[in-house]
Image 1 (tube, rainbow, N blue to C red):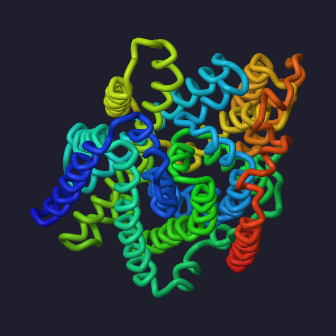
Image 2 (cartoon, one colour; image 1 turned 180 degrees about the vertical axis):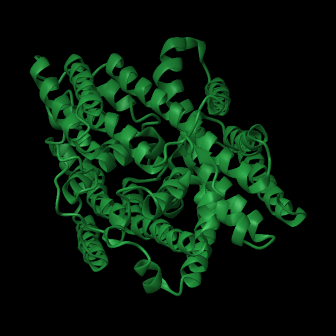
Image 3 (cartoon, rainbow, N blue to C red; image 1 turned 90 degrees about the vertical axis):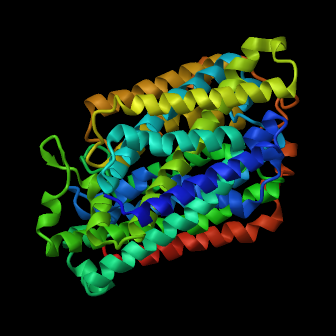
Length: 536
């Protein structure tokens, strides 16, 4: 149970968020301001907002559990991050210049302009279904954590953070999302650093902490397998190649991520957002993993710790190891701050998802359907806020129908993403790279890629789920081109990658060559760091 001081810390934080959103609500007149801040956001705040979304409850729960307890897990998760800087370069060069120049609110509007409305609605609809499901799981996960730490019931925990998130998102729009994400990122990172120092210091230092991990868990690189039928998901090649395409799809074609990047005031600022994420994400993930190593050491010296975890399917739920640690080791006052950190992680994920869901629903479905019945910017803004409320309530309600969280939640989330990310990226690349692809071809290719990945999941589990990103992408593009028949001219597609106009975009500016070079060098540095941890 939380003390009065702890509850005061939590209440102060929640009141501050609502106050901020009330202040920002008076500055909004159009949906462009509500959803993309009138393209006036600064690169640092947007970059931190994007990172805050990544620093979600799934990461806080899953990464430490994967490193410390999950069979086959360990620091090998870190090699996944080698793909991120490379993906940022690809997105900066090939995707964001086009999306930003077209002043999109929903990234799927590009598909409507390049192909047709059916393709736009298909991909947007799938995004909404998948993200709405993930939102419900996110609510379930954080409510379970809050219930453990505070002693509240599950329903009370859902209402505590869910309704506050909806309120500040509805009132403040994307500006409130970005500002609150920055605040949440600072708080969460500070608490995680404190926990890492606490755990590693208690184990006798970093070297002593790592020595308490088994050799296979300590290794950060795995070159022995390829993941193509050998039953090993976390080999180097699938995590690098499959991870690259997963990250390109997620950061470059997922509305929940692209929407913040579209808030930037210029293409140059968008490039900065991507560069900052490419440089700073690895230290954040390393922090998760070191906390996982610390948890393993802590469990080794406190035999009763694992037994204290809540059960799931008659086994300890390792995802709840970190929140269980709060009540055992943190002093009064800091427990309240830790609860704020958990709330921050959940809110930074949930606010982005419901805001992006309302943006795509409005732009891809409601406005085309309503037509002239939405006549003024004020009416459109009302619709945007109403949809935000609806999606927020949907996430809260679905949380009550989630039975449990997978024992490897971070793997489960990425696995679901890998099912659809490759085919979605394939549709975008058909539009960006080819002159002959048509809407019908793109849709057929997408379905073929999705069915192929679903078949691999159900019937060929020995193929690493990371390869689905590559396989789904390839099948989508090949089938899309085979079905397409009508070639289009460059005049009809001024943003085709091979057009002269595209090569004059910010992504190809010589000014950005040093930044891209820095990301490539950073990738080599990360590889050297992972080598120090060892190989399997």
